[in-house]
Picture 1 (cartoon, rainbow, N blue to C red):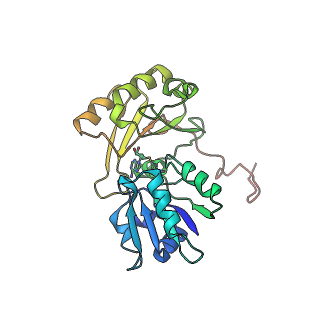
Picture 2: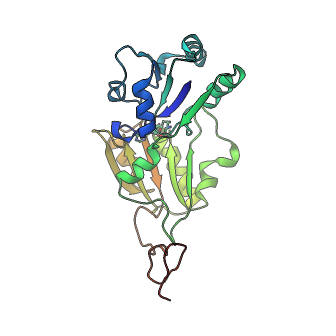
Picture 3: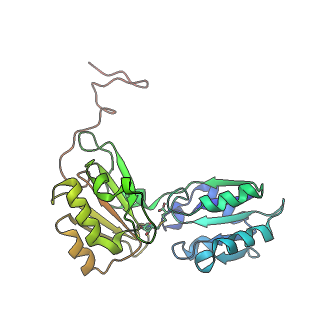
Length: 251
Ligand code: SAH
């Protein structure tokens, strides 16, 4: 069996119980070495074969899987954060489907939620935003035109921007045009949940300079929106006057 497992954002305790159990049992682990921590691999069996996919092509990854797969072997493909976001698993799955090989995807804590937790905030707050846009700026990987950052920012909701901090000037330019304000709060979270995590806060007007001063050009989330600073309304969920399936309100 082949398992695609989300390792979480960095902290070794932020993998799921299921992911950790399978990692402990694995005979072969192919891990995304650029972002998955050594500590994750220390829990593997002594005789577990480990391959770092950072220097491998898709073909090499798939050959390694084909070579080792059997009814008895547990193969783990360890991805950073949650494997359903920016993990390039779709093409791996496509090949496994063609080969009729069984696999399962075990979700993980994505860096975008870990980053929001790191700044002690909630993306969705009443009267501010009830929507989160997860996106990136185009680079060597294209982004469909309809998903241009400026168009997305025009929704003026909460945003989590992956894979883009190296292009902070271009990102900010597009966001300003979209939000049509320069004072929108921004938090850049570098290496959320790692010991060297850094949080930089500012606004669309100020953040680019701060990011450059701190020399952050990778491994960061750009969180944007009024959920970071400013007023909000309390949620109905725990309001004394609000009734729902589990509680009767007093009005
Ligand atoms: N599947 C991963 C994303 C992989 S793409 C997830 O769910 O998080 C790699 C990008 O994710 C990085 O460029 C960065 O934008 C973001 N990222 C990954 N780990 C991070 C972390 N610990 N802190 C902040 N951003 C992170």
